[in-house]
Length: 372
Image (cartoon, rainbow, N blue to C red):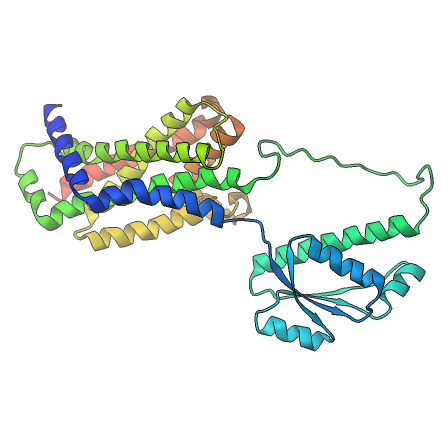
């Protein structure tokens, strides 16, 4: 233990002596946590719309006003022909075209039916899909309003009506920040712990101090612990700062027990740091370690369920996510912070990251021993 204490003192001095590392640890996650949730909005707004109104009737004007008043669309052109509107799509000035045909109002009143044409720029599939869906919903509501005005409803309807009442649990107003902030906190903690631990042993190799350590009687597992514990402590501090920012900037207070959250993060960080140390034992330069970590971090983040639901992934991708520690971290963060899940609820996730921690840290110790 005395040897470990000396190693920890040396590591902390080495970390805080490097001002760039201190900036990376404390300021970069804070700035990212403030900026990213405000910018990474899942809701698609300001969809550029071009309208071709061939009817120019009061009803067509009401429909256009209803679409623009929804707040999702921005009128980019009120065109006389479809070809004129299509040129706006070709120049990326419009995302959708709504064409209202001749006789729109007359057919709607006399024949109770009328077709509208919507053309969507599908280069951005997400924006096109959501924009088209928004427009269909607004047109459907407009149609229902017209029917209410034109058709005299009987006092007692002959047709059974199903009235649906939706209750949103754990996120009543569908606030995307409640969903995204816990996930971003998980990513930041992963990046701080993973990158710094991956670069640490490699840095010792580059400056030549690893040779001095190797000739000392320091045991290999003590050496790995000396590299792991400082970043474990610092990553916990970063996580605490993230919780405070979530509380005071976004008003997100964990519903569940904080002790459950800290217990999971303690084991999870051992996994991430063990992975970083394992990478560092394979690399000879910091560039190699950085590129390898970047490769795995991209996989971890994109397959972690932060931006896309794991349930919607193909089966082979779901199998890969079972070996992704970030997936478990993001799920537990959302479970504890939003649902108030207990330790019993997160035990399967805790078991998975514990197993990964044992494997990765054991591999790092064995691999370091093998190469020396």
